[in-house]
Image 1: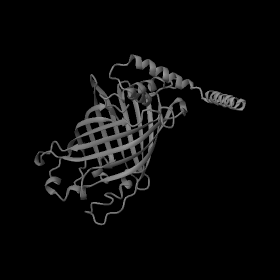
Image 2: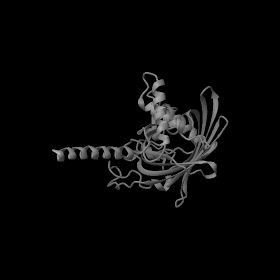
Image 3: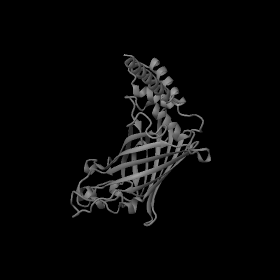
Image 4: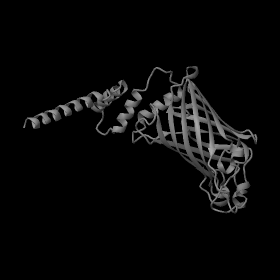
Length: 340
């Protein structure tokens, strides 16, 4: 009997010591975790009835972003987007959104349409163009580092022959560009600026068949630098190879095996915001073939939230159907969302 009582006491003592060890082994919350928990509780008490948990989390993530570094035009845009990106009534822009009612070219590319001469001979050198570009977050919490995020993006560009009266004003070309991208700010601050990195996978095609079909897939990385009202990005890519077509009209196979000769292996972007004006430049180049492109843009205020947009393009690949055709184009219209 005494042995049984001693055994029971030993078990109780052992369990008590083990529990005490477990309690002492619990890692205390970090200062950041405590601040986030307090923020979540505060905003939960003040939230409107239909506010989602994701919106509350996003608001706290933005509130807790360090304010010590000098925020530039890119940082300000990212922070503004994250404040509302989980709001079901808000659509977040990705690239620029614009409508250009008039785009004039000095060299219309008729070659791809020769199989249908009634179209090729009636296209006009002036047309309309628009770009719609949106993105949605796929993650709500940090993945690998503070404030990183995974997104799905979709960009649609379309060229509309609205002035071609003889052929019922068709949409000449539409390019679709879905992508998945990972965005992460860094702690690197060269020249008192900020640096972020982006890695993505994207597909681009024009949704056409046979001789008019154009498409490619690529993996890209991008480094973005900002300081004040200036931003620059370098975006190299690797094209995912496809099998060759057995015949030119085959449905399967590479529609444009030489596309890198004209589109190059990278894109360099520059942007500057001056008061209510934004100036942008995008350049591509293949140093082996000496082919590429340059796109310049400027947005300017009109009235209210409405802004004008002037775009100039020179080189190859203004659209996928024109990837191997060089031309100069000027367009004027309205910016629906800015570069910054």
